[in-house]
Amino acid sequence: MRPYPELLRLDRPVGTWLLVVPGWIAVAALAGPGDGIVLGPLLPGYGALSGGAACGLNDVPDARFDAQVPRTAGRPVASGRLAAGRAVAFCGAVGTFVRW
Image 1 (cartoon, rainbow, N blue to C red):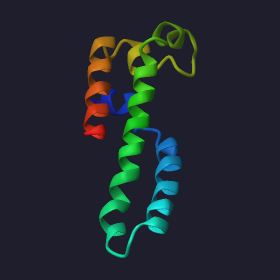
Image 2 (cartoon, helix red, strand yellow):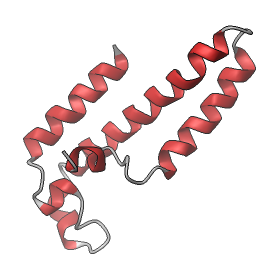
Image 3 (spheres, helix red, strand yellow):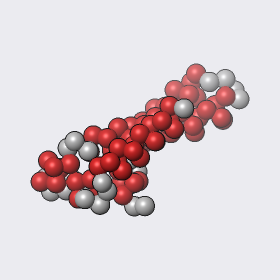
């Protein structure tokens, strides 16, 4: 189970926070009094998940190159902990869920 959150970059939440916080601000500015409570946590979270899925899909074609770079050699697909087909299927499922 551990490679899947790493594939979506959930173990490094800086990018997620860079998407979520401005999203929360925008929802708070544009939503009505009751809408912010419902939409506030949901919409930016979906954007962060889709961004993570895009990062995971990008790891598949870059796996051979990433395996040669020390900073990226530990990524799930580059290190061989997760097969490329499983990574594509998982990121596709997350992307489909987010868009649904």
